Amino acid sequence: MNNDFPALRIKGLTKAYGNGFQALKGVDLDVMPGEFFALLGPNGAGKSTIIGIISSLVRKTTGSVAVFGQDIDKDFARAKKDVGVVPQEFNFNQFEKVFDIVVTQAGYYGLPRKVAEERAEKYLRRLDLWDKQDQRSRMLSGGMKRRLMIARALVHEPRLLILDEPTAGVDIELRRSLWDFLREINAQGTTIILTTHYLEEAESLCRRIAIIDQGTITQNTTTRELLAQLDKEVFVIDTQEALTTCPQLDGYAVELIGSHSFEVVVEKGQSLNDLFLPLTEQGIRVTSLRNKANRLEELFLSMVSSGSESQTTTLKELAQ
Amino acid sequence: MSPREQWIAFMTLMVKEIRRFTRIWQQTLLPPAITIALYFVIFGTLIGPRIGSMSGFTYMEFVVPGLIMLAVITNSFGNVVSSFFGSKFAGNIEELLVSPTPNYIILSGYVLGGVTRGLTVGLIVTLLSLFFTKLHIQHFGVTIAVVILTSVLFSLAGLINAVFAKNFDDISIIPTFVLTPLTYLGGVFYSVSLLPEFWQKVSLLNPVLYMVNAFRYGLLGVSDIEVGTAFLMLSFVIAGLFLFAMHLLKNGKNLRS
Image (cartoon, rainbow over all chains, first blue to last red):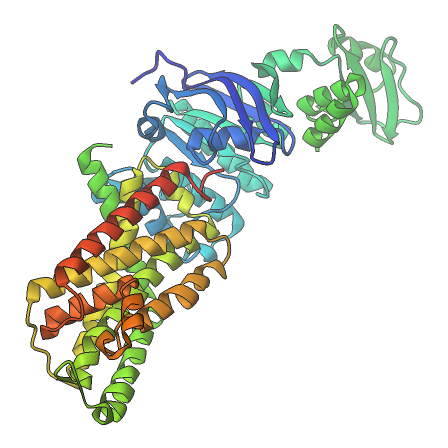
């Protein structure tokens, strides 16, 4: 086990396509073993290109990539054994049976048939697909197909799992169950990198977040530090009594948004505690308090207002 | 990958390929059997007796080796080109490409799948021919070696076609405009000794002529060309196609961006 090395080390990675498009402009990135890492960026930012290079589907132009210390230029086959990839698009044979797809993939990694069948059963059960094992994959629902791709990527038990927008188009219930599953395998030691458009997903799951924009990493920090950059947050407060006028809260911007709720802007350095005393003095009883929007989205939107035009477009896309 | 792991990957791919064409046997095994049976009926039974003997054999006896080779060639090529291009088109070729399976295993797996189908159809056609004529194999080793090498050659060619193909039209152009003329003019239905001298020499440029005649030599003991030359040509072309296919896979031509 090469746990002394980063699970993934990318240095000076560039990719120029034949048409001249520069998809990556010198990406440096370290993901440590056991991390749950998010790679965020709008469409065309370079996320899938990075994943493609790690999985060998895209040829890099310059730079280096190492998986658990294994340079892909020196022994890609060995590096590949440590990587499982869940692509964005369904890319399994629609006419094959669910069980066969997973077992065949195990065979490509050199796993004996018996081990392959045991692993296939293990992951199909864990992903609630065991009762579909004999079905042709085209008969599965979208969510099931997504889970099938995860089972297929895990069958050789990689130490690094890369998921390219794993919950795109998946309903909320399934998304939550996938999150629980990913948390579980991460807790068991699998390093996970995911790209997502759902910022809530990144905030909920990942301890570190990198933001890539136009082929360059613009942020690479812990989720906590990223959120600490928030200048202000907007909270929605629901009240027991009907409100006829906007509550008076000195130092806070307040806006009435309904008969039983109002918004309050809490800036960096201000405390939520200071809200409640004046509300109590005004005879207002609070029944609930929540963030108006996902905090990462707020961060992006706040960056939008101060950023360049190109950044604005990028972050708006991210916040969608 | 260790040799054992590579063997497992190879077997996985080959078994998958065999399962693919046996699962759809109505499209892969039945049609060539019916087509070749019709050839037997029309050229062998109905027209053959009017043609008379060729190279000292009845026309039916003469045409059987050619028709077996016709079936082997088209099915070996067709299996690999459709399977590999289908995987590329649907995206599931990525299952293989992201795995540590070496390129030569990928190539071997697809080729062996093509060879298995080519030989299976060849066997079916051979059995069907027994309803029309008797076969006395003159040189068993030559017969088996030629049919296997021919099948390998056209399986490799099928994979190369599939790598270059960008749409379904591209996988029908070569069979229609190259493979069919070469096969039909490759001595399947006639002895090149019937042709004027100029066209005999032109025919020598056709690689299928060597395969068909070497196979006919194995079955009947007669050939328009030197069997040794046929083996040399087969080995040379197979080596060339193998190296070219490996080069394409290594560079990820139309497979990796």
